[in-house]
Amino acid sequence: MVARKRTAATTSKRSPGPRPKLAGTRRSRPRTALGAPAVASGRRIGVAVLGATGTVGQRFIQLLESHPWFEVAEVMASDQSAGKPYDEAVGNRWKLPTPIPDAVRRLRVKGPKERLASRLLFSALDASVAGELEEHYARAGHLVSSNARNHRMDPLVPLVIPEINRDHLDLLEEQPYGEGGIVTNPNCSTIVLAMALAPLHQRFGVESVIVTTFQATSGAGYPGVPSLDILGNVVPFVAGEEPKMESETQKILGRRNGKGIEPAPFPVSAQCHRVPVIDGHLEAVSLKLRSPASRKQLADTLATFRPLSKLGLPSAPREPITVRTEDDRPQPRLDADRERGMGITLGRLRPCPVLQWKFEALGHNTIRGAAGAAILNAEILLRDGRI
Image (cartoon, rainbow, N blue to C red):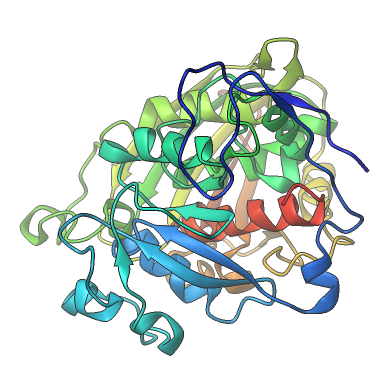
């Protein structure tokens, strides 16, 4: 299978990097069956983690330690960390229960815009620098799988959840980066909502959504929310979260058109709260459907939603959505780690007297909602022969 040719950006300068492109040229990106010879041969592909010392960067390194397709070969962080061994750069800020992998511990941290040899980059960069740096590396011929918010709503950048809108990856062929490109995953709260809505929208059609979130403190990074603000308290504001949930959900559930993505036509109203929980975003969702449905039909539609089950992706959950019947589930402590943190747990599915139906949905915010989502996006890119 051969990718469509892409038009490179017109510029008078040649971008630096391992795969420099020539201005005004067109390149084709060949694809192979099951994506990559490396997968078939058992060889692991070296990747780089951008923003490697932060909360999400650490999670990338943890999840990639035993990944069968990818291995961390390079790490990049701020100028303050550049030149140091990774363990020295992180110091006492490593906040995961597993130790820093031995293969990463002594890697020299590279600085922003420093040349990277890896073709695939995972971005955990802070939004204050992600936009410029991700574009820099894409122009240099790298494929960037980004968790940052900066490019999510760009018309030609796919905002992808592989179970839902894998076809949006075709936008890569229209980006002005030659052999490079940028793919994004959603906000950590958006991904929980979109996963719960997608099978219902596909079968019954969604007309309107109201969602209230109860978001874990790990979503704020480290050091995050001050303890005196969050202990024994709920903060009814998470900066920028509500408009992201509303617009990103519509893009993910939208469809391709000649100009990019036509957003899904239904409105989403979000209210976001920070709560004293370490991991796991819980969401209370009410929705109106276009076609009538029984509770059993809804539950069956959700529980049987397994679009990636035959693709053999290492990070894909066997059961993307689990429907619980207990009155008191899902709960972050009991359900956030289901399917190695990659599954969504849904419960309390019941009629809504204002709209039609309501339920609770839960997902792990730093795994399914961040690093794990970007890794799954890279797996589908490799599986489809785009890497």
